[in-house]
Image 1 (cartoon, helix red, strand yellow):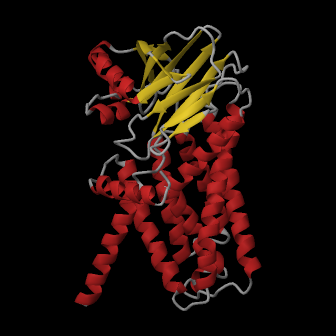
Image 2: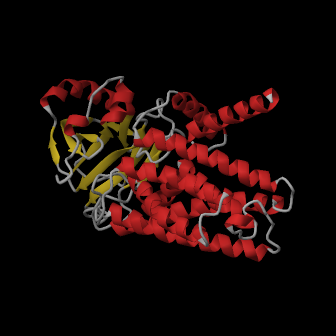
Image 3: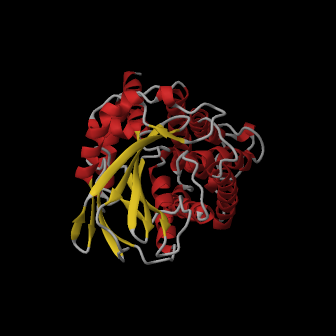
Length: 421
């Protein structure tokens, strides 16, 4: 009895360690923005960071909650609140030490003009406006160094967006990124003559792939749907009668159906949320996403009702789409390139999703005929149920378990070792 209890205890501890790692990465907009506006005789722009990121970067404890946008308020820019003016010089100094621009090999002075804020329902952005000195003729290229927060947060990404570029014919773009900076790519060259949005489109694909990889809860939901793909359908009374599918085609068509429904569902809500047509509080969305994992996993142990995998994949896929939308931010992204931005990001999500399925499915199919696949199905589903409940408590009640911070740092190191940084 003691031996069994010790094994169970160790198993539960391992589950908690793995689960706590996941929430460090799920659906955080972990991005800052460098907006540039290119005119024939000058270049100006804005660096945007959330209050949370500024607190991390500068070791501050600014409380943004008094300035969260009300439910029926429009998203608008406002002057920096007077009580936050004292942080302006410190923030400017930090950015000048982390962001540099060069024209033809010569450093270009960044002159900050003023700071505004963008109030959202769950966060506030500082918008540091600036002008570039001495640029009287639009250059062909700018070399940009961007190293904001990378020393404190390996997951963070810096997105460069050209909002207006007279020379390249870009007007009213607030959605397609031209460059994406990461800890391994802090120096890049920005072309100011290329009117093609191909590079930005590719950058959005990469961003979509990145966020499916760090969205551990999305991966767990996919895993919960994949586990029963290699066994024959069961009724409730047959829940323990686990029989492998006789042919590859049986499993293949199941996966194709489930992934297609999941894709359609999250594509719908991703688009609607990014367009601002629907808005759901992130706490509710994230909590339902957590519960979706547990429900799908519980169905693997005790079938809920006939063909429920399809219902689960589509219905909860709608909420996963809202989770993906939070990655693009709650910033009211708009402009003539919004459709291209959404399309690229969604393609990236789908590519990442397909690669994950391709990595997991061969193992499941190979082990389906083994006697212990029953244990893989049951214990794997139990693990996913524990993960679901853990994340639900964290998200719904808005509590942070200290274990997350330590495990998150460990996962960061793993990502760096395998080259995902």
